[in-house]
Length: 109
Image 1 (tube, helix red, strand yellow):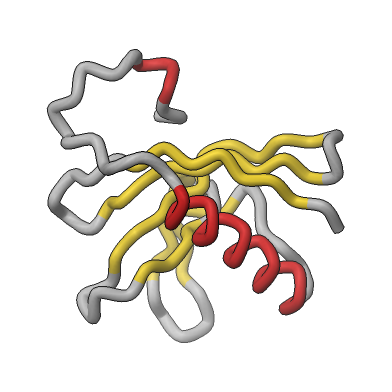
Image 2 (cartoon, helix red, strand yellow; image 1 turned 120 degrees about the vertical axis):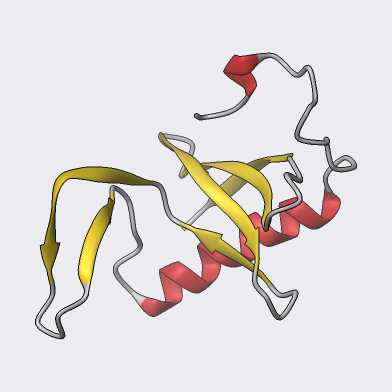
């Protein structure tokens, strides 16, 4: 599967490192992936999600407030997507500070 990622670095000083849009096979675009840094200083990719109107409880009792709107089904697809996004992040321009005056339409939120 051919994937291309466009990354915009955006360091808010609170773990958010950037946003990504991914083009799939030159036919579909998924917007709103985020690149975050864990407490262990490792980068990870979060899928786009939406806040639920009413949270629900999982079987283990934890409440769910957000639901992913896009996600890979297979382990291989997830690994490929994450690799493409993080590779593009590593090749991108320097981080923009949170108070940047970048145009609003440049970011998915």
